[in-house]
Length: 331
Image (cartoon, rainbow, N blue to C red; front, side, top):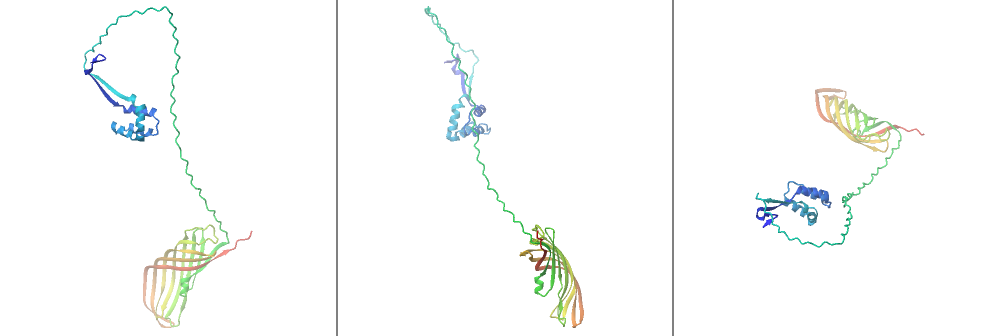
């Protein structure tokens, strides 16, 4: 059997499969299905075999994508190879000559051929891409700012005078002064001055001590009025003094001391001009003191002398303060 003059047994016809690169280019040009991007990603993936690509395309839209591609884009892309295995010349088919039959010549004139109407070329319109559907932006609720309440100024704070209630409870007469400075600072001065003893010198409470310090309030005040000295603060102070103590005993102790203190506390506002402050501090204390015996009401005999440096609580306050202030002028 011959095929186009060649022996059929020497002709090999083989299928080349699908040219995936041309297939991807054709899909990019002519396929606009909803999964177009996914199809192109599968076709251009070099790590997938032909069978894996086919299985991936079959899984899209329940196989509808594969059927549409197979019908519209794939038929023109199938490659076929033909191989002839012999170099001999093909056998030319013998064509038998047929006797010519003379047709009678018609005497009628031949009708004129009418030119066929020209068919205008079909111009393919490019597919119209549907614009992406944009989701409406989610509007955030407007932030409602609370109106600022302006402080009604009732006067200008000059300075405060107060007392430590803890010392007052043990007859330790004392006084303090607070001077607001700037938006955060408070300059403080504390003076303790109890000075009494009984006739036999076996009970004495004599103390002269001066502390100078500063406090830093973390919450600033807007103006120097009734809003000063409120809230949490950090503090530091230094002080010096003289003491003489005896507690129902002819033996007593007297001496001098120097101290440093760091600490903090909180101040509550009691109305506009009253303040209640709790404060605690700790620091080093240097003291030089003497042990004495009272042999007579007016005679003290020193028995021992010592000096020492140690760390101990140096500040303990529950103080009540009143801010002296000026009254605003009427406009």
